[in-house]
Length: 494
Image (cartoon, rainbow, N blue to C red):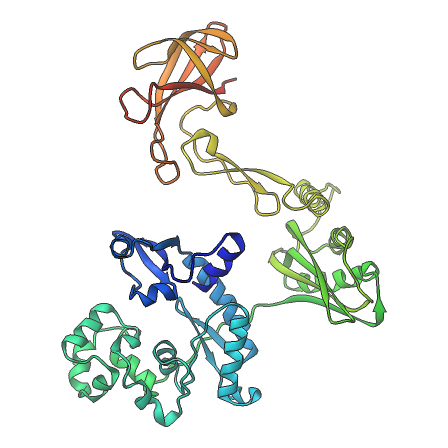
């Protein structure tokens, strides 16, 4: 929800604080609530509820589409950023981060001060944080979600988690209902039951969903190691200067050579670069460059960066420069042609790089194919540095070489019932239909078109002078979506 709020605030006005806002995903029986705002929580709206049911009770409900994959990507980045407090961090499901702060809390003045620092820095990023410290991973996960702000010692784990509901174990809903029917509504009640009887009931469950195993892990009776991913490699060339300078251009060769040497050893190529200068007044300025194809040719990178230096403000001078490869791709070592021929694809990529660096990445684009049945939507435009053109989808029917965008309406002089026009006028010229083929019916795309959009019947029409047109009739008589059908010419065959 915090991520949605930050993105939305940059694009349009936000709903009022008293308006319940929910983010939804597609469920088995329609949209269901994925996340909700504080105003929605105050109205006792719960995640997982169907949107239609909630809207019947709260007509002012504001519904937006959730982006779970974007949330996961943000959490992964935040988990790496959180390593400023400890070396082992990992994303915890869809809404949390686990940090092993063993031996690191004293660096921040103790656990309490470290929690305050974490909460402050998350708030500076516009993110709310519910924090807890416990000797075990499971106890910390439960306390952060149900008793935020708790600092639990090794001897107080059982006492701290005893009042929590059994759902805090993050087990399946049917297991929660089973435990509640047995009268075990809290973890304290679960801990008081003889283990032999419960283990017989849950012995066939996997460890990740077995309530007894999860409880033992939370209490420290079983190991629960943190499998933190390794740090992502950082491709960075740094140059410190003995005294401040104004012009970074003379130092680009050394930076590019150092960076390309690092990339060559790892058989990687840069797709996106960032040049940063650190001024003596504490400020910094950066310039980004994107490449059409991965490269580690130092001379090519220097040419691109030189075109980005205009307008950069050095202030009173800078004494530190860095050149970083923000995005890399595998680029194996290869041998040039023995006959001296040049690689045409490399020349095209270098041309795209130079044009994009000079004109801007949004000014250079090419065609790509889009999955759609509507002819004018099949072809799209993408930035040349954002990805290559995709292969055309398999087309079973013949399509004209030239498409008109938008389709041009024709005046029908005489129409054959349930067929193409026998005579029609287009661009002030009357045409007589000699032969035709069709129809090919294309229905509206319900997930994209507005309600009331009419279907199309396409015909290949040959006129008296041999030319062939691609006509379509928009709508049919009696479809209840407008008046009489209209005719358009969509394309011209070779």
